[in-house]
Each structure stands twice: as C-alpha cells, then as structure tokens.
Image (cartoon, rainbow, N blue to C red; front, side):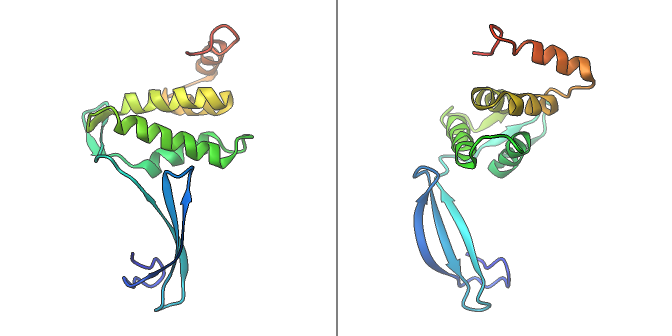
Length: 154
C-alpha cells in the first residue's frame, strides 16, 4: 500500500480488525520512510459494476461517490454514522447481487431513496430533491405531501 504522505510503497500493517459489522477490515498502517500513520479499509468486491447514465454514458461504479451523496443528504441528522455505513454497504451488496455488471443510474437512485426512506425522512427528501432535480418549492410540496401518513413508500 502506497503511503499517502511520501509515496513510499513499502508500508507496514500495525493493526487489523473487523469493521462495519464484519464486512470490511480496518488496517492501521505505518510508513517507515516518513513515519506517517494512516488507515485503510478492505472490502470484498464481488464484481466490477458499471453505471449506465440516463444519457448512455458509462462509468465505473464508485462506492465513495454514492456514500458522499448519502452523507450530504444525512448531514446534521440524528442518525449514527455506523447506521449510515451499514446502509451504504447494504446498497452495494444489493447492487452486486443483481447478477448484472451494468447498472442503470436510475436503479441506484431508487435503491438509495428506498433505503433513506426507511431511516430518515429528511435525508430522503434532501436526496430526492437532487436526484429528481427539484426546481421550485412546488416540487418539494408535492413530494412531501406524498410522505404524509398513509402515503409512505413501501
């Protein structure tokens, strides 16, 4: 593993332990060249996923990009970071288990919205406002009115 501080490729693992409910391994590393310490996470990747955008463009699936957008939607919400990480890992497992390597971006967005709706309505609305490209207050009003009791998504 390359040191992020000096670029040395000969780093040492000082500590390894399970993380994220045993779906990842957290490794503390040390660089003997510069003395830097850093953490890496190792996860199982069942297959390389490709995201197919609505305009037909294709790009490699980026777990971190999806996680960033979810964390932005969940900013300052009373949900533990561990729960958010579990949700992200669950979404990735669900995408990998479809058996497909080409995943439409629309499918990813719908799965993320479904997961967010189960843990926090405000995060769900925030994510939806970007995903569905809300243009004005009426878009929010219409969407939120569908969240009223009796209208929640299944």
